[in-house]
Amino acid sequence: MTTTRLDHENSWFERQLADPKVRLEFDKERASDEFVDQLENVLQTTKMSRAALAGKIGRTRAYVTQSLRRRTNLTIKTMAELAGACGYELHIMLFPRTASGGTVFTAPATPWHVVKARPCAARALQPTLAVNSSAVANVPDRSWRSEPSSNACLQAGG
Amino acid sequence: MLTLTQVLEPSDDVCFLIYQGPLRLIVAYRSRIGDVPVREFLENSDVCAKARYMLKFKKMCENGPLRGDEFRTLKVKQHKEAKGLSEFKDISSKSRILAVNDGERSQLVLLHGFTGKKEDDIKAQEILMADRYRRDYESRVAHVYVRIDAAHGRRGKP
Image 1 (tube, rainbow over the protein chains, first blue to last red):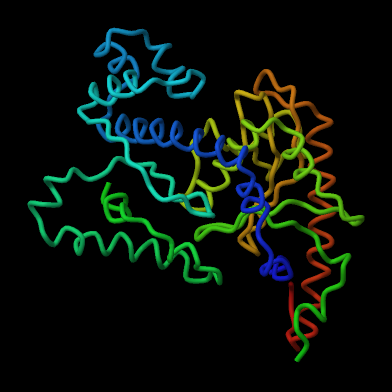
Image 2 (cartoon, chains in turn brown, red):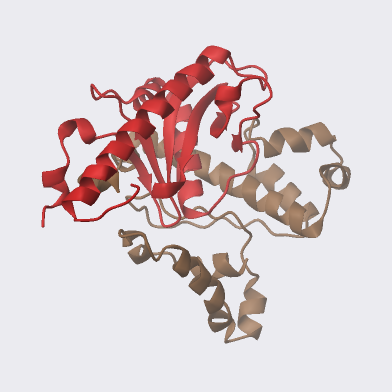
């Protein structure tokens, strides 16, 4: 690859993330984006339209569209309301900060009771992880794998 | 056998590493004199827009394809030079980054960023600029590979 000369250097992304101002904005954007992506994922899976979701929370379709476009600064109350209307609970979790910006969760987590009821659930998720791993077989830098990602199994199962 | 560092020259730096993830590599086009137009564009953007673009890059490289309102292939209807170009969209800052997929090297090359977008159509001058960068990138990168292959005793198309 032509970029081999740069492999020993940090990427532009990592250098930017080292700046506290950029990091704070990135963390804010990621949190907001994760919620929107998860909600869109749920809407797609359950085949619920934005109009139906708006009807459930007593708002207009435009409001839901605006929320999903991240033009509004979503409050926790609104997020809980939107998640609840789709049959999901809103949980907020803290993860240790990593230099690479951590994982971006775009799908909702597998409910705890499902994991608890099937002790081999983590093993059952292995094929999904294996598929993802094969996609990265040709990528030389695999440092991303060593990053702590306690929710990885749940993410893959979601 | 020669190493890549011995084979390559400073002018061979055709791209600048933006983000390297398990699924994809994103680089920015670097001109012959060493300028990186997209890096300059991103660093001159406000911190919120920069953070949003960083998040899009991360999601694409780690989670897979983005949604249509974040990244899409340009329509060729109005400008034939737009063929093969894609764009990252940031609705809030009304800006775009045009990119081209370098399939042979499995990397996405960011070519040109600009602001002032209101509707879906893009000014011809922005597309022409991106096309000019793309043609320069393609001609230089092919030349680099011919020399890398020659140094490794390989033949054929780069």
